[in-house]
Each structure stands twice: as C-alpha cells, then as structure tokens.
Image (cartoon, rainbow, N blue to C red; front, side):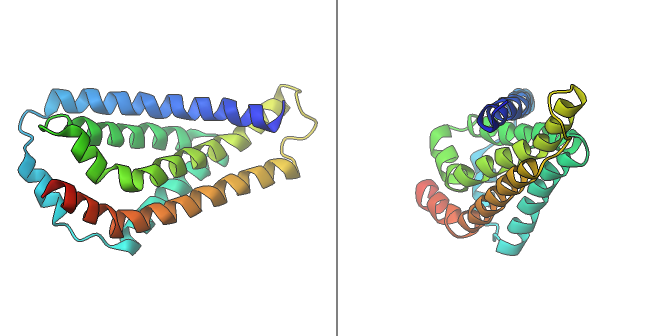
Length: 184
C-alpha cells in the first residue's frame, strides 16, 4: 500500500476516535452544565498564561500520542478519546452562553488551529508503527519496520512538535488578547 493511502487510512481512524471523544464531551456537558454562566469565562480570562507550562503540558500530550508506537496504539487511542472529550466539553460549554461562536472564536480558534492538527498528526504517527507491524504479521510486508517507516514516523513527530510549539505561543501571547478584545 502506498504511503499516502496508509496515512489517509490512519488519519480517518484518528479523526474517528477523536470525534467519538468529542461527541461524548458535548453530550456530557449538555447533561451537566445547568449552572454554567458567563462569569466563569471572565474569570478564565484573568488567568495568567505561562508559556513553559502550556508548552510542557501540550508536549506531554504529543509524546503520549507518539508513544502509541511502542504501546501498540493504546496510549494514542486513550489520549485521542480524552482530548476529544475535553474539546467537546469546552465547545459544548460555549453553547450554554448567548454568544457561542464569539466564545469559540475568542478562546479556542486562535491556538486550536495549530493545536488540534498537531495532536491529530502525532496520533497518526502513534498509530503508524503498530499499523506497519500488523501489515508484516498479515504477510503484507517483508520487514516489520523499514527505514522509510521510521523516517515517516519522525517526519510526522517533528511536524506535530513544531505545530504544538506554535500553538503554545499563540495560546499564551495571542489568544488572551483576542479573547479580551472580543469578550470585553
């Protein structure tokens, strides 16, 4: 199977798992968000974002996704569900306010356009090595892992790390400014 079609298959799997968590998060928040109010959002805006803390937290997520390559996809699967759930809760909670699109735009979109793709790319990488091993066990490949497989994994890992660094920068230095402008 060509590399592009392998990555497409892994991306579909990754997005499906993430969406399962996402839909669960939206469902959860709709059931338990009766006391949600706009003051909570304003309190969140007053939190001082710290670049090293945000970056380290986001890198942990990326490395747990990448660890799927040695946990046979288990850590990637669990983290996709968990992070999809968290995004679902966050977006679902914005629909409890009068201006959900304004909140999503202010609090999620600026850094989310880098953070979510970084997470999904790292998940594809986390599933890549187990996929190749399965192909070998099914007699679809001569070797379980080739040099090309490792290079593909490392390329995806590097792209996700670069994107997560950009996301952390945006989350700390740009998202709060956009949120304060749009929400005050």
